[in-house]
Image (cartoon, rainbow, N blue to C red; front, top):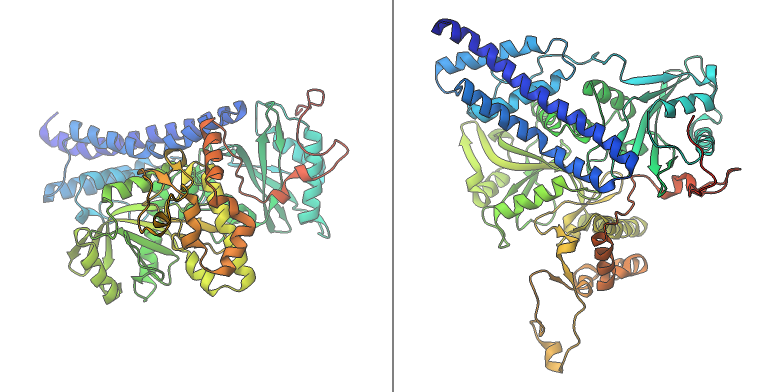
Length: 599
């Protein structure tokens, strides 16, 4: 092959190498979800958590492999006009390869990730990467389609529901499927069907893939009647004897949104065409951005890509300025927001009020990213080299950026570049919420605050700094933790009771008279900085007084060290079928003489 021929072939070869890297990634991504199903059937809860954690690193591993291959085989790097032409051609060669591909939007994002590792950020525009999508996914679906359809008016409600469960292909037997189906139908009548006139188009739609997370598998579907859609989910659990049971029926967008809340771990679900799943989920949760849906399906990089497109579009159609976020000024993070956009942007300060390295802080955020967030710790998108137009930055914010984080800010003419930041869903800081709330609302927030700590403890997380300013209140009234620079594994902490004073002088001393280790924590001290307000104190002590006792924390440590995983489910306990009575008995607890398999 001549040099001219080699140059002509190079863009195509690079494009194919990038797509091969993505296809390897997505194959492993699907295999991970298939393993989750097998581990759910075996009741291997620790194994499921490991799968969820390991999968988060898959994408970056495959990107590094693709970059290494391109650099080794093609020596492709970019700066001069020849390279400009090369990478424009690589993109043009890549687009036809996505014809008929089942994950084209994710493959485009992978292309962006590889290019951004090789090229300077001056190349980050649509001539070289997919700032705008190159392939539409509006009508893309698999064969067979991503969801199954059932006709309850034709085959009967009980039989339609039974087939829906059978079609999931779970290997484990059910404890008492007749009882469970009767409860589902009873709950469906109570929540949806009573008083409803059923139309000729009455259908049940269920996504083919089960959604796995922790100890639960979730069937996600929708009830369609006269063109109206009612979202629903059926959580499936496994008892100690290895038998499955249907635990609840969740209906309505708000209940489904709680499953996909950004403070929870990502689902594992085997999807051939993720765009079809997102399109289906969007009908259930119309207000939830696609960026968050992709993220909750485990496709976090696709979520980041879509979020950045949303941000660019919003900036194009809005006029307000980025400002310092309301609340108490952080000692470690500078937090700013765009009032018309429901997110906050967090930058690690160069000049911090705590003796904590930037590397340590990033490590804490990584710890939370890879951990189960149990609905109580905000997820973050992490970005590098993000451009913000100067005209949209409030002067006070600009000055604070330059004063407190100069190493992360670069002037780029009409824009500034922030070299590293985190982005989270915006919430009302809990301390502000408590100050402004009516008594009933304040009481609910304090109860939620204590419950948030309990659920983090169940996941082996100690928040470290438990001040109210480090927690936020979501639009659904849920209290969520979001300040991670002091977060630690619960089992790494040493919870102690304060020793009795030896003398009156000990009691009056400004410093402890007893030795204190680096991991020592004294829960009795929590009340000093949390319960100064008598109204707050009364509510807290009525519901969460044991959080001030070291024995509470020690007992939780013992359970975690014994390998026990607490049940923390994303729906109210009151909705669980175990509270119902039927002719089959109460609750899902099995007996050896009362086992019914699904036929």
